[in-house]
Image 1 (tube, rainbow, N blue to C red):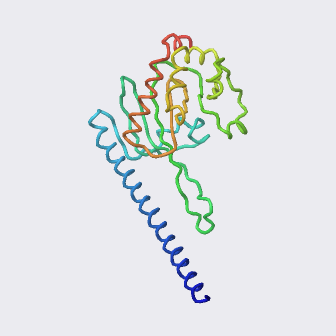
Image 2: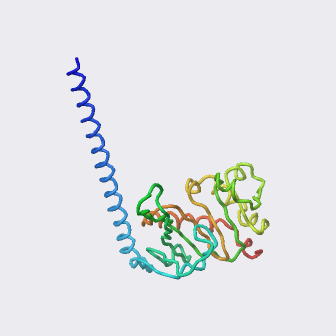
Image 3: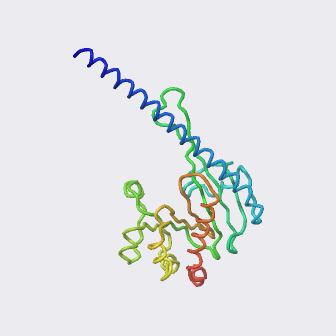
Amino acid sequence: MEQWAGILVLVLLFAFIAGVFTLVFTVSARGRKKDARVREDYAQLARIAPERGWTYEPRVQGRIDQYCGVRPFPGRGSNLRAWHYTTGEFRGRAFKCFEYRSMNVASGADVGERKQPTIEAVFIVTAPGSGPFTQILRPRLLDTLFDRRPKMQLGVPEFDRDFRVVTEDEEFVRNVLGRAVVPYLLSDLQTEKSPLQLRDDELFTWYRGTLSPQAVEEKLNYLCDILDRIPEEAWVAA
């Protein structure tokens, strides 16, 4: 009996070790596959940019300093770096998109403190006019706890429940959102992970992750669709 128990323990131990090795191999293979996909995305973006009359640069420095103080950039800084900086025209509007990377210490790295970048893909389209600083965000727990700025109520219950609007000019926002933008934001699935921010004559959106040609197409179309729905008189009134 004791012999069978010993054999069972050895079998279970072997199965556990084999499982650990299998898990490590699977995670490593997935990581390599993801890295290869990201590298191909970057290479494809570099290829298609000149075909569309866009400008692509693998890395630039100092050209995004003007965005300090707005999400997802730091409150202040200089000579900030942007990766895969792409500019051009899309649906008749000037745009720029790039990755912004900030360095965070990986949790649990007691020895050596291995650093990993937090990557934000940012998309910016030029608006037909200028307006006051405005954010349209999906409410998050951290916003509720730490963001003490007053939240604008638009008077549309579903929109007021699902979105948080912060602005210095409520009349301007009401004119901008009008009758066409609110239904679009409520119906488009992109709004789940695509916050909006207007500063002067630029409309932003961003997400956490790497840049890809597909994302460039989707996010620029998203921003242009919103701008197409904003009445011209809203910019005049601003």
